[in-house]
Length: 157
Image 1 (tube, rainbow, N blue to C red):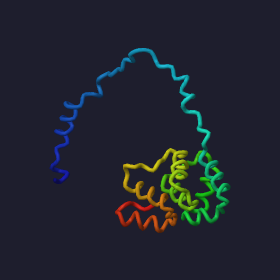
Image 2 (image 1 turned 180 degrees about the vertical axis):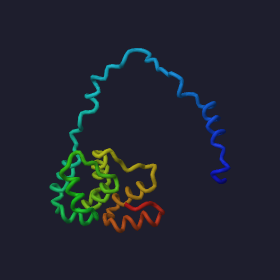
Image 3 (image 1 turned 45 degrees about the vertical axis):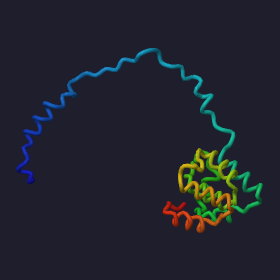
Image 4 (image 1 turned 90 degrees about the vertical axis):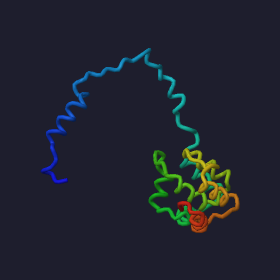
C-alpha cells in the first residue's frame, strides 16, 4: 500500500475514539498498612561462602597453579583475575563449570562451588546431567566435555 493511499485522518479518528485513556485519571488505593521491611536485612546479609574465597581455598588445598587452571579452562587471564579478585563480579555458570573441570573437582565439590554463585547442576536439564556424568567419571578435559555435549546436541560450555 502506497503512503498516499493511507487515510491518516481515519486512523487518527479511530485512535481518538478507541483510546481515550489519556484523559482518564487513574488512582490506585493502597489497602492496609505498609509492611515493615526492617527485618529484610536478616535475609539479605552476605553468605559466609564468598565465591572468590572458595576458589582460592580450592586452589590452595589441591596445590594447583592458577595459570594452569585458566589455561585448562580456556578462560582469559583478565577474566580469571576478575573472578579471583572482585567480590562483586558474578561469573556465568559456563565459566564456573570450566573452572571446576580445570580444577578436577568431583560432583560434590562442583555443586558446592556452583551453589556459592547461585547455580547448580540440575537433574532436569540434560546438559547438566551430561556434565554431572563427566564430573562423576572424572572427565575433566574441557574439549572432551564439549565434544560429549555436542554429540548429544547440547550447547558447549
